[in-house]
Image (cartoon, rainbow, N blue to C red):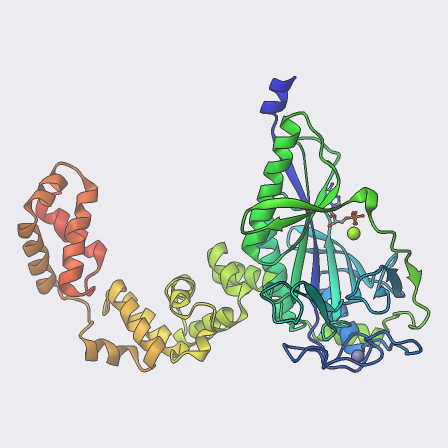
Length: 481
Ligand code: ADP
Ligand code: MG
Ligand code: ZN
């Protein structure tokens, strides 16, 4: 029996719960502006401070954004849903309850990529507790203070079905979701700043088993890397437990990215009874046909659709299509370059330049904000195709265009980066062979790797103006292959 346990293969099952702060002008139920790092407690009013006798009013823009999200995730929109009070006591919640949705969410039964969406609902964010230790800027050595600026910020909660099967799939899917939400322009979706927050529910089961195992919930991993690492650590912990003959207990875990440790936050036995009650101060959400139409009309082409179009219509490799589609700025620059290149443009090669060299030059920033013009990139790619510039020299030209702008032909001429001609190249190759007789010896003996020494020498000598493939051709010709 222990032997069978040790050898058994397990399948991870993961469901995600995501909180998205909407970037509306004002808070969910009052007129306070949203806060972006203002002085603490400067964006508050009697409503979001929970003073008695105040009345909330639902933010129409938040409803519009939530409808856009629901529709983008291919959900069914509930004709009528209400808000509930979720009761619990905590200093970040001045009313003693959070206004959220309970039995009927605004949207449900959707899909994004290969993951089904269970529900999408609207709620309000809690305030922020600042725990000040000895090094904190707060007077006493051990105290916590509350900043109510965040309290009442509109949140959309998205809950998936348990369709994810690995930590890397969880990370990739969350990237697709983030890209989709960013494209909708409904949120800043910054994990480090908390405008996108993700909890992961994790269980494992013997491969082939239909019923789900007991799950644990990992709270608030604040980066894609930590999400992937945390889920992997939890899968490993559960496997180890089961293999040792133990059982998984349903609990909420906190992942510490520094140590990699998972520690329990609370177990289900002491789980809160939130005593959900219908919120009597708010009218039900009942989107009119007009509201739905307005939300539908506001949907742009979404990243998943764009990736599919780039792959299908332009024949891009799936990886490139996805990377271009997931970053609107890159996708737009790619399409502008393609258009500038005109008829017969090589979309695949242009996509390689965009996702490879250009991204390594501009990083996360918009290439359109650099000095590089799409038409200049189109011409540079054309010059490489015609053999006027070797690929490695073209990379140098690209770096110059990104930093200073201008025309690639001029840059090539001014910097002497034109491709080495046949005569020059033959001369340089022959000299490199003469200088490195031992490498040539190895090549003759059939050692392909040794060719790198000659290619490297030629590249250095020509400052990258040679085409590596051509150098190898000349080299092998001389060796008599
Ligand atoms: P709870 O009642 O604990 O909140 P839910 O049924 O509402 O649980 O599900 C919460 C999240 O957990 C969802 O994303 C769901 O897909 C996921 N989930 C549910 N059961 C499992 C399981 N056995 N393994 C992994 N994820 C699960
Ligand atoms: Mg739940
Ligand atoms: Zn307010």
